Image (cartoon, rainbow, N blue to C red):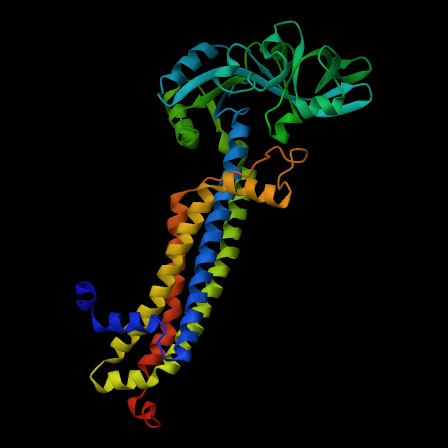
Length: 421
């Protein structure tokens, strides 16, 4: 109580106007509208937090699955091959951010099985070195990734690629490369038969349907290289890949070309960021609607309290003090609504793995079917910067909504307001 007594009178009057009067049905109605405005702001804030958290969760899930196959940084020699890749790998590991390195060679080709043709990316790797930079060996569902042996011309396919080619373990497929070889009949594509020894599932359709692994030695023979095309690196923190790639370019010897994972998927990440921005704007409109509702609440309050405003003016209150009274009322509604929305949104975002299965069980439906989607659960990744940004936007909108009604209240003329009282 002592704290309340020490507040400026503008705060005290504004707080009193926020509550309903005991004998005034009109005051009760205005306070009900204030409650609706508060609930609207809270629901808008909560919805925005939950939606962005789910979108962040999907982005994180897809990124993790992509990087289980992709390297964080790829290093190429400008000459087209990297004969001394051991020395280059040792140089790269001197950077404490690099935790793994492996050589590779890569090309595009056409896989043929009977009358079925499928384009594919053929990546030559060393099976004993590949676990340093990817999780493909762990993701091999059938067969063995270590069955890739030099000179054996064995191949490991993505699960969707194997399904499209209608091929199983031990069966033969034909690889045709675009780089042709001259013959008396003209330039013909280079063709080689491979034996399927493994099928992996990364959980990302782009790789499961278009990626195949062979031994590095076999890939070099196909591409007519004397050495690997480059190195694939894994970092301790994938988010620092652009920075680490630049550091490696400056510290490693030779004419090297660096390419980090964010550049390999620049279009996808740009699309996700655009979608998140548009979703933020669309859902912010919910908060804006609640803020406009707050404008109507304050206008009704000003109309109802004109006699009170006139009395305060005759007692010496300045127009600025009158503005403060109604700004306090509107800001209080906005802050309380934002606080409730943040609490609700954070609670739902942190427990969405429990809430969604409960709703699915209650309604007898499944939002993400395993037969259609690779992700069968709704992921959530709550990021506090997003929460602070959403809360800040809501408070600012609520504050802006108080400006016009407060300015209108400050312009009330005491004599006209009291004429019919």
